[in-house]
Length: 593
Image (cartoon, rainbow, N blue to C red; front, side, top):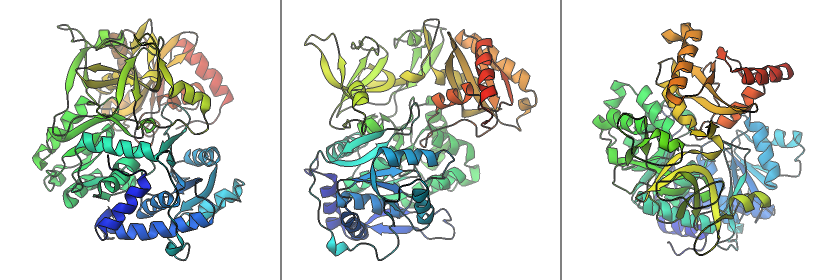
């Protein structure tokens, strides 16, 4: 560990020691016309003191402060100012980034009991108008990039303890409504230490990424980890990456990025969108830790990216499959530095019945990628119903203990008792309490953690567990018209469980000209491979909802279907599902198209 009691103490020491060293380099969206913006440790300190003094003058010390910024230097300065002020930062997406974000941020503002809002001058008029319209006229809003607000010389160091809250991390809501995870200074320091040990990161590293700053991996991995190390980071916006994935790889080359990453879809996008001509200009040999934090991690993604970018110097052992979540601050497990990802095949039928076994010859198999090993946590696999520990190789819910595990969800005492204070039964020493229930399914084998799915998204039909992502991948490999990563499988309960697939179709693909035939092929495939009948809903691109980190929102897609709010290009529904959807459509004219 570092010897610091709080993350604020650590940052104050880093800024004092490192002076003019670059803390961050920000690449603007119009990079061809705007030079990169450099923020030194000294410059970060000065701005953080100034804004922190404003927060202290407004009585926001010890209270929650909402941060509404694009991915920019101003966000980093504001977050650091909250640390300096002893305030609890609440990072959130800007209202209007996507249609549903406005309602989401309003909910966060109310739930977190926010006492002040920080933003930039470009967004302050809209934010202030929103606050007024929503009736939050007593909450001050500051555009932190405007001079004249706050006085660095008036700032006073806050009185904090390791148990003081550093920030509230509102979950992305992939399976439920957003909740504020309470991350203390102790949690944050412990997890940064765990990341350093797992990834082998050093002060000499250059981190880099594009993930949203309000997302746990973007915030803790790409912003706070460089500060923890005393390193530097090159950062770009999600918009820049999505428009030109090549720009991410170009940034890694240009700035010598050694540590950085994203979810599966980021690597898949690079494989599809980076041209041979662009590839020929890249040198990715500096990239020693390429994080992949999507669960479950796709072996196909690792293989395809490695093969595609090996000519540019990318190495298979650079991939860093890892596992974590906001409730554990960030990281739980990771592949040891310098070791290639561990990939194994498992008997598909045995996996459905709850066991990790080698496949019999000729039997259906599933490929699993290990999410690595854990060093700073205690991890158990537990039967989610009986709450008893599973033997090695048994599939169950992943339960976790450790200093990185957050104190719970903000203002959710009953939920916290269930999720953060779970009890393992049946041990020789009696009940073992204080475990975090992750909601993820997995297995342990030889010290490796294999994440196999989400407990709440598991489909149970005829006594068998069917993993949604298995069905999604199988179907998407059927035809080029079926967009990879853009389908959602879930179950609908009409008195019995029904499997449903909502899948985006590429409109210009040849087979898209005959959607009834394509639907019939999909249903035949699902029936043959998974021995279940299924409903299929084909939709246009952009229909499938995802979280800010790229995770499929299967639960939300189920909700949209059963509420009659999807506009299908073509669909075939089982009778019970059809009846449910028809009844909902009569009540709900608003469709998602």
